[in-house]
Amino acid sequence: MNTINMSMAVVVAVLYGVGFYLLLQRSLMRVLIGIVVLGHGANLLLQLAGGPPGRAPIVGSVPAEQITDPLPQALALTAIVITFALTTYLLALGYRSWVLVGHDEVQDDLEDRRIAQRRRPEASMGEEAASDDMSEDEDDPGSAAASGDPVESSVPSGSSAGPAGRSEGGR
Image (cartoon, rainbow, N blue to C red; front, side, top):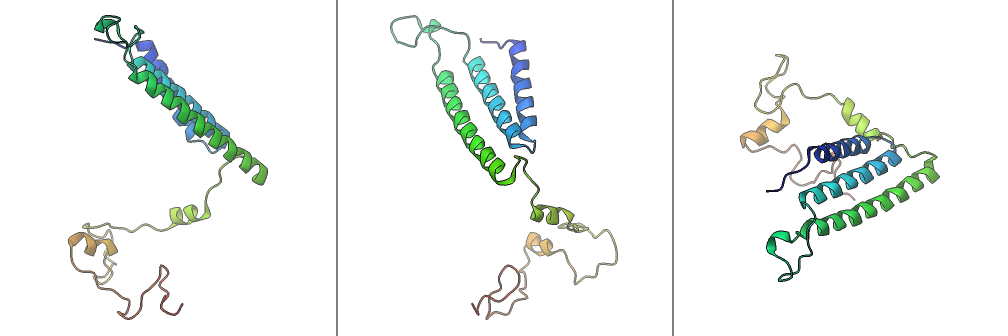
């Protein structure tokens, strides 16, 4: 049975924690460093899972107990290539942002802000409304779909409405 050294497990946990913390930042350079740190944590985890070093996996040259599994090493090489590709992509993205905007900070999208400020419904599917001022013809739009009842369309059958309710037949 193969056991993992506790100090190495803590190092992997710290690498993953720092990597995810940096990944959640707004600066593209911090995101880049977070990707690199996560890649190092993944490589270390794969090497720890591979167990202690052993002999080359050539059948017949050494006993089976001394052979090292080559799969974790192959996975670590693959993780290195993926980390390198993400690093070059993020470097190009950060450089492009620096040239166009003058900084590498990711800004909020105006549509995201608008959606975040939109009023949320008071009750969701199947729940009673929190206030009694909601009449019966103002049902929650998701409740008919959740109950399986057919939904009546407010658009006449001869025209098709676009996303904003405009008729697309006249285009």
